[in-house]
Image 1 (cartoon, rainbow, N blue to C red):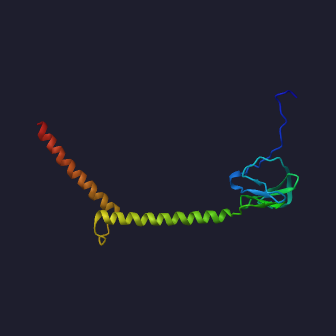
Image 2 (tube, helix red, strand yellow):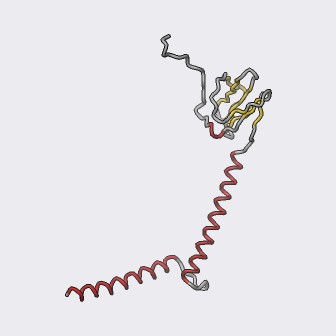
Image 3 (cartoon, rainbow, N blue to C red):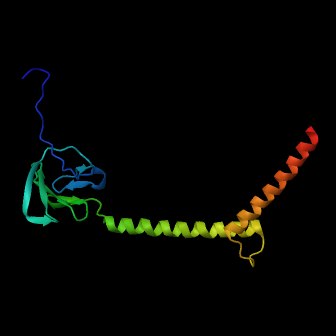
Length: 158
């Protein structure tokens, strides 16, 4: 080997791996926390007994402490099998449901604010003003004011 060539370390990341979705892992025998997307050298094994929709499960083993992490395709996450504990355990489905409910609450609040603004701008709450009626009134006012200004310009230049 030449001086500029280096030995390639075995680092394998599955095509579906997203490091931002994996929480921190702590080794049981030490207080060291591994952050998300930490580069580690590991041994990959195929978990033959497990299968999800025809996709293989892989088990990753690293460190002298035998920390085993297995990919969880159903929840798009990783699970720790032995030698480590999860610092944060979250469920992606619950996060999606919470986000969806907060978005619907925000939309309802915005609709209520819009209705109150329209009521305050256009007067009576008893009259049901649709957006088309409001649009026709505004366009009619613009057209009426445009005709007057054209007449004034014609008289001015003639």
